[in-house]
Image 1 (cartoon, chains in turn cyan, green):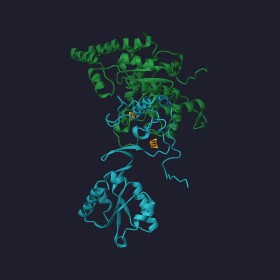
Image 2: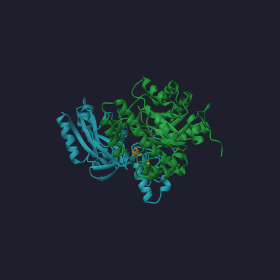
Image 3: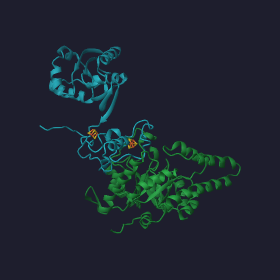
Length: 221
Length: 310
Ligand code: SF4
Ligand code: SF4
């Protein structure tokens, strides 16, 4: 899932400063699991907005704001009278969710601003509700086949291709005062366990950024 | 096998298999290097070369390329330019390597570098585009092939490149295998983290002997009890043996009134500790030399050189 956390309300209030009539949209998928757009969080946000003197003209769950197809369907439920009144939208979703909505707005000729209520941290494993671990940075060239299934980009504080660095101490990482595991020691231990230290000794080239990061879309059809 | 190319005094001594001594200089948060230059001058007669650090612990200091150049020129000492991959991307580092050559530098110590998070500018972007192994690869490509990414360099740089190792590392096997990678990447010498545990050091050095790379053992002669205590407390993963701490403490107490004598006794105590330690490793043919990391303690070098030559 995509793990999110709530922004401080002060930041949201500041963003909404000059807008009074608000439509609140919330994600029905990952952000619910992250307890950022579940019923309790939505009610909390409605309360905050009310206390800040905002008029919430409408609110609705969008099942998956990051999915344009789904957004087209969910949009049908948004009443015209709310759209007539609205000054700005606020969405509780990941960053991709908001930007999915922007495409929808273009399609529907909505020229009102939309603001985000959450911070997005990454692609995470859910250990349990309230404990999420970012496991993948979506680097586009997955290295897990070489590293025993443990991601060096997210599990090593420096994202090294050839670790561990001199900063590891008894399997703990220098970053964060030796409280977290050194990703490269985890990789070593895992490869050792499965009898594949031959992979550990392989010298890996620097990460290839040529093709990465900016304006990336995956288009195969 | 082709004759190994030699670009520096360090390279020459390593190629000859001489047992050598290197030192360390730590420029600080200043634009005035006069103290460091003075220290370098005192050290110069005894060492083959001296490392110049690159913002250790992520604490911002004067840039190590500039400092290396100035120190080498002013103090007439050969420098080992410590270059971390923490702050500059591959493109920037390739440019710095050419710049380093143009400024007269010929030795690089390739380091990952301490994460910015640990230092005094934690909000700074951690770059780590390369790592210490891939930096060795880059240096070797630029020097040996005269290219960057296959593109020709009109007048290529000449460098020897080394890397670091930690004999105290646990699990040791992971560290040892990593040295194998660094050697494969083209690293020509190793300087180790400070070691005090002889058995562990022997085990580690024996383990990496197969990589056939000269290893300079990191030592930290302790100038005072405060230094020993501080080192023990603040350097992660390095424990100064209890008996050393006790001895240094007694020197501190016993010679309170006679500072000159106290210095002499401290120096002698260092000599007595490090001589058998180094000699044993040397006799076992596990070392190519010694890297002394004790900064601000240049007067220890005459004693150390006795150990080295002995
Ligand atoms: S290497 Fe890591 S960041 Fe890259 S795709 Fe694989 S899991 Fe994700
Ligand atoms: S200690 Fe381990 S996890 Fe931390 S930066 Fe170094 S290699 Fe990466």
